[in-house]
Image 1 (tube, rainbow, N blue to C red):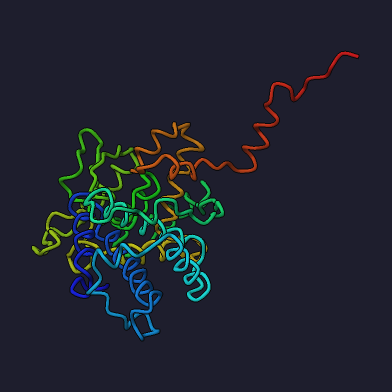
Image 2 (cartoon, rainbow, N blue to C red):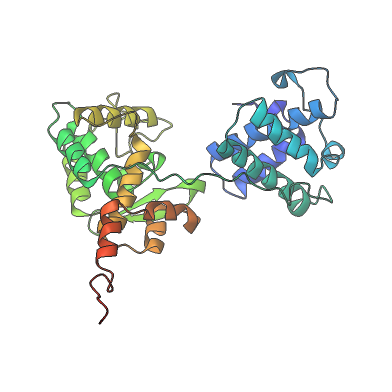
Length: 330
């Protein structure tokens, strides 16, 4: 993590604005920090204002509005070229950094009016290949649940509840880790989670989820630690009686995937979110707008990656075309 004391004042003001007013997650703000640090260091090198050729050694604390006003679109293009040729960054990484630069200059020109002209206004994003998300089939999902249920692990009930929530609700890792017992309304089968940007949303729990959670609560340690993680309120606890960590959940998922005979190089915690979304779309006849709300996506375009169909569905669609058996009269 890049420390804010090494940043120019304008950058820190932007990061604070993003965190407090835009309600971006700390992880997103850290990414902004990293992207813009590299960009500004490259600009000092690009404008020959430093003798350092190693970007990590370049000091950017003195960068101000006057310096930023010198940056033109061609200078940003030079940075993207540097990323591609010297850093071997792929289109997705370049696209993310371009997005960060756009947001930064929009803040400087529109939000604070620090700058008059926006050099990033007409920046184009590299064309990205559309990749379908990897997901478990229905059969593989059932194998994973069965393997976890039949595990001889002392945390079997907890791990089964974790896998069940992932596969049925499509929640993010951070959302699962952040669940408190008080977030669950058992009488209404509802769960409140905090998603990206600290946005709160409601998830409906089916019978499988309720049953798994209740069985876990029967064996959950009652002497959870009182600490800064609010472990005493957490639903899922580690073996140390603290709120379970992201890494522990990732290890649980990897271990159970291995027990089920599934490839851990292809599947991970986030792939279980892909799986839940795909199964709901394929078998639940769920509307894409409802799926967007359930997954907590800000943009419908993000949700659309889950509307891919398998070969059987394509074949079925063709065979059920009303013209499939039509024969013209001779």
